[in-house]
Length: 101
Length: 230
Image 1 (tube, rainbow over the protein chains, first blue to last red):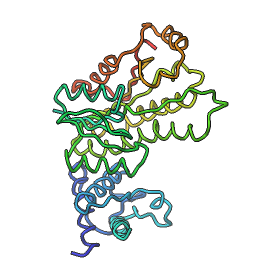
Image 2 (image 1 turned 135 degrees about the vertical axis):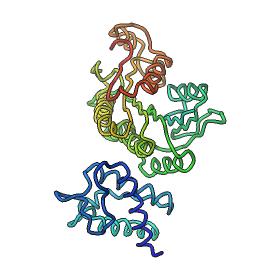
Image 3 (image 1 turned 120 degrees about the vertical axis):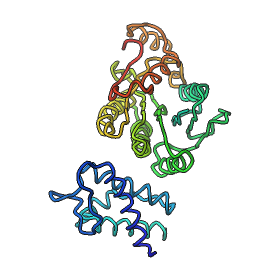
Image 4 (image 1 turned 90 degrees about the horizontal axis):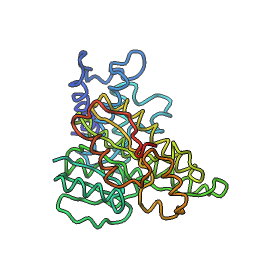
């Protein structure tokens, strides 16, 4: 499994955890799933839970601590939290940087 | 048997609380900048700076790996400085805010991440009677502990969804190292302002902590209890 695929699997696993606590329909594991803004599938609390669960899975599975919601993330022109796909890409970037550090 | 994390367990109230929970059969994880002398099979000590985000995250990472959960966090560690505001160096202000505000925030944040997985948890923060007393010479210390009250009240709302309660205890004059530099006359004057004019004891603080963490207190959150009738 490539690094990107592994990260995607971990974020999707985190989404499973968030979906399990929802009373509404599960949020689809689709890269185009919107996470932020008016069309967001998750509420703001759901997004927080997804980010925390993703960080914990990365630490548990890869032994790497990353901070997904950082000043860097918030200052990007296009938010990494816009879609599930962009979140996976951003997390993969953070993990890659942490491995090289 | 609960897993209890207490900051500042090397001495004073933190050490007393660690021994209090160990005597009750709980697992206690303690931390301070320097090693602690507590020697018990259920006690694990970590030497960290509570205001260092990396060290705090590493500590919680270890707790996750070892215990896979945390039931109670007691944010006891704190520092004080009595000084005229006119003579207070910025470096000391920063140090007090880092330990008393940033440190408490980091521990609340990381503890809540662990506790939310089990949908329950208790956080007890420490403020001080210096806030309602508006003590001259303690502007920065009192301001930092006023911030702890705000953190307690707001985090109580943010974490309620996860079954986590956040409360604070506000000791009055208690015989700790923080008092060593305070003249006796000033201590007596402070005690005289309390409804119950006596020096606070560690057991008074433990009693409030015990109340906040008991299972029946799951409807008590965002509250601050000052001791001595302040």
